[in-house]
Length: 56
Image (cartoon, rainbow, N blue to C red):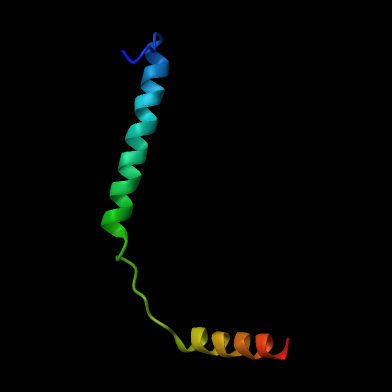
C-alpha cells in the first residue's frame, strides 16, 4: 500500500496524518473558547509600553 513495505512505517505515517487531523479539528472547535477581556492591569501595561516607545 502506497509503496510502504514495513507495517510500522505505515502506522507512523497514518499516525502523523491522524494527529494532524485531530489537531486541526481541536483548533477549529476551541478557537473562540477563551474569554477575551482587557483588565485594568493590561490597560496600564499598554499605556506604559506606549510611553516607552514614544520616548525612543
